[in-house]
Length: 485
Image (cartoon, rainbow, N blue to C red; front, side, top):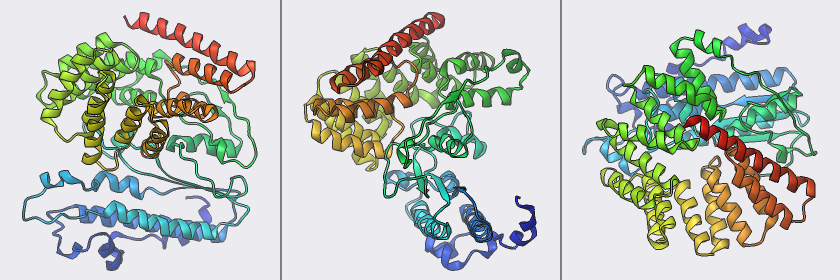
């Protein structure tokens, strides 16, 4: 701990699980005293997580009252920790309990948000006006059709399933007041803090500096990243190689991750989770042929049949084989009727097949399945664009983006809606955000940006930049495809 002079004093601020106040436990679970700890370990998990949370809060507030800082950056991990043990309750909860067994811990994560609200108010009230503050809390793991890669052995292995949205609060002389920025991702925090500290940004770092939050206009730049040495990869053990693959994927370095994941699959042919990831990655980089072959291999694994059909449906959709996609997705839905992602993918296929009314019903059904589905809202917005209902489309798309801010297609759709309303500036902003989220294979985004910038009377320099970038992307894509094949 730093500063070391407070080590002994702050040790006394540590709270232990058995010291949690009964009223706090009651706040999170009204019947907590009736729960048998030997049969339900979640009670102990909750006590441990709350003890850590309160310990962090006590030490932080004590330190803020003893020292002054130019910058305070604080991560509140409680939602992240709770999401591993206490999933949000929904209509499928009846499948997890017996008819006579009451549902326990149903509101833990919702109550945790209330606790965080109180803690944040306390922390901000202690901060001097001349201190810049960054407070971050993830919203935990995302709901997905896909299972965790290689199984879930620890919390660390769940990082690839994290939501990239959450709570981000900025306060201090650097930041604008009363400003809400909807398109910020959790990965934008590290670049922002590096910018505040005056430290260089590596070009491989995920995320972007939150420029819109600054009071003053700022310039950012990135330094070239060191290339990964193939000899170093050979020296790595299996665990290190797997973590390297996941790190590359987190950095959107798909082309660098692909050969490593291919070799991994060759060495572990029975690892169907890795095979599923490989097929997804091949789809992402446009290698439809190999992606389809690997997805068909997954059909032979009974535990992956629905996932394989869903993935094949996506592959056929991207390959514009809409009828084949539709048939497979209908089969996947028969096996998993209320899966929102399957319903949303069916809706996308239906819009391309020209049956927009059925597509709208599919997205509506997905929304009934999960009332907080961002993808369903984005899908409804997509349908409304097809019907030239651009103003309503903007409303639905913005609601969807609040829930899934890192989905680049949502920003592309929002740009199309603004384009239909002839709001060129808003359309350009949405396209730029889509480009941030999908920096590779983005020739079409650069072309659209060049067109809209011209309509918005932008400088020739900006227009020509995107024209050049589009051509550069096409060349890179052609080289990548030739190498993959």
